[in-house]
Image (cartoon, rainbow, N blue to C red):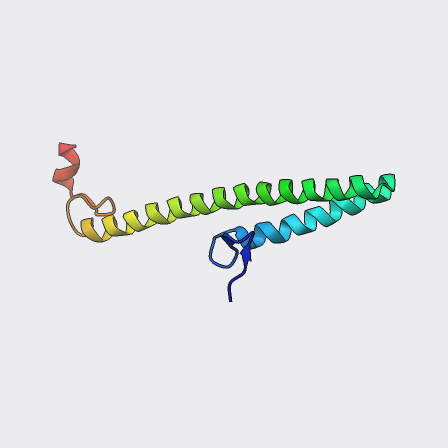
Length: 107
């Protein structure tokens, strides 16, 4: 069963959304309680908690999406490398193929 945040963000199916909401909630709790303990102002502490939720959630969202993009790039490069390895294996273009003496003198 999926959970939609604000009616449009499907937390289950969108990458990084679940973790972002959880870390945002934790950041909200920590910042709100910390501000309340320091100042004993309820209304301002609630404002700080909402701001903490937004900042923590967006911060972790961008961090997670950046890492996900980097991981996809590495996977694509690895996939291309494996394809090229299979394609060039045993041919004269294979970088791991040992060169004979006559081929060494030519290059």
